[in-house]
Length: 133
Length: 133
DNA sequence: AATAATTCCTATTGATTTACTAGGATTTAA
DNA sequence: TTAAATCCTAGTAAATCAATAGGAATTATT
Image (cartoon, rainbow over all chains, first blue to last red; front, side, top):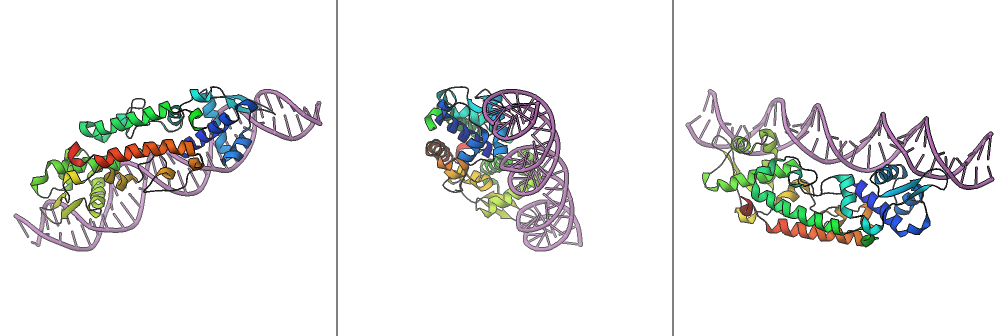
């Protein structure tokens, strides 16, 4: 469950937008500058967030992005899953991204990792952008 | 905190050795075959585990590896840190592998990840090879 | 109508990491 | 002397990651 910079940047962008909810559409350049994110890289992330329906956009001059949901309706779990996939320490123990891995046959070990997955998942599911903005 | 296969294989090897503690030195080929690990890859991992003093070795014919500590004195945390580094979701929130990351300035967000780090860390610190073998 | 500012979209790049493999040197039991 | 093992480092192929490039489409402003 190591976060990539995409997840980190994605969260930072959402937090920024949550803090400026009532200011209409905000451009990538503004967000990038405010949060210290390479603008062209952020562009990709915004597109992904938009396609996942966390954001709404407006094209053209005076265009930009705004939240498509209330901050308290966007969980950290959803955002991190979008950019990084499984929250679990191994995919063999993931609910959403199951895949076989070497430790799978070791039931006791798997149980430990499942417990961790549950805790991480619960925590990130419960925590929303509103909580951290 | 996504486990690499090195960590997974490393844990599997230690579990095997814990289950065969009283059988003297056991060769890489035997462990590799039993646990389904590419032998030359396992060799590297064993070497690392030896250098970290989890294992003892004997060279030459009839040689091999055995645990250098009791299974209940080897925590999952130590093994995973050896192969994968930080247990924390971001290094900015890691005690043992601190490094600056983008979310660092967001205190609320960092707090969430610290809580996760603490839970993961505690759980893996408390759980030993004896518990999972 | 022209221009500037923006999102949209895909491809590409360079660096790093990951999962291995290769192979020689050394040691030791048979 | 030989076979079986660890020791050790280098190399490699593929994947992932972080970031850049650049053109197309859209829209407000001049």
